Amino acid sequence: TTMAQTSPLLDGDGGRSRDRLEEGYGSSNAAATALATAENLLPPPSALHPLHICSILSTAFSYGCIITTMFLLVLPIECAAIDHLTKGGISKSVSLGIFAAIAGAAQLICPLVGMLSDRYRPRKRRKRRQRRRQRKGEGNSDAAEPAREARQWVKGRRMPYLLFGTAIAEIGLVGINAASAASSYSVFTAFFIMAMVGINVVYCVMIALIPDLVPHHQTGLANGTLALLLVSGSLFGFATFKVVLGEGIHAMYLIYVFVMATSCSVTFLAANGLFGKKEEEEMAKLAETSSVVQDANQHTEEETHSQGPALLSTLSALLSLGIIPTLWNMIYRPLSLMTWAEIRNAYWLDPKQHYDFFIVTLSRLFYYLGLSAQCFFLYFIH
Image (cartoon, rainbow, N blue to C red; front, side):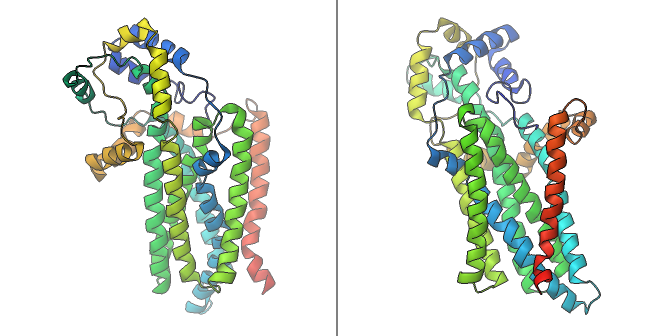
């Protein structure tokens, strides 16, 4: 609920885009004028091609592939190995229940990730673009900057968390495979926690891209595509495990790594490529007739997004900061903007104020209870 805002481009976390414009224009009045004009200049979102929506949500394919097959096929086999290794000291049913509890607890990170990404502020490289324009004799003629700022910062707040979650998930999956081969199940559990956290971070960010990037009238199509990808990923995982891999769990872990990396890359590229050069040109033409934006733009010294490929600009911006400063900027700084009351409210739902959503949440509880019982289905068959 934290991430699914009705107007993510201009509302988001309740003022982040306005704060960024205030930083650029130096005064709240100029920022308010620029923001209001940018809203008018933004063309209505055009319908996305179904394949583009499918690409944005492709991470759901890997989520369906990994989660369903891991808990219905792979983990029951691993837990049977634990039972055999400990000679019944830790029964396979108990160990499987522990792993299921860990996976459920890992989902609690999703509201926090939503709050962090809503408050994330990427580092800005100031004055460079202005100097480039001056060298070319362009001055401050780019009147579409406020419109670009309002339109483009959306993907900047999500993509670093997508990359971060993917890295954690991949490290966890590789570690699980190595620990399983070495029969070191304490290490296996540590890497399993890491993998579950990373997968849930990635899935959380992907879900947030629906209200961020998909037009409102295509939300139903996006939700249907999401369900289709989840089911198709699950079917792909089961078929691969049985037909292709011959029920080899170590080869299945490699499939997890490959599918996760591929689907997250597709989501990253599709989300970053949503706003292309053609739209930039259309916005610039619209901005030529607006003297208000031209006047407000004279106050800014802030560089917005590069004209180069969004992939390169996002990766280079993260790598140029270094690992520690990047994590500081992604985790500590957003946390410093929160209060304990805000964090607590993210995990609390008032039944009186949100009765309908409370009923939906309660139904999800029973759904997950039934889903958790399916983890033991392989043992029932045996």
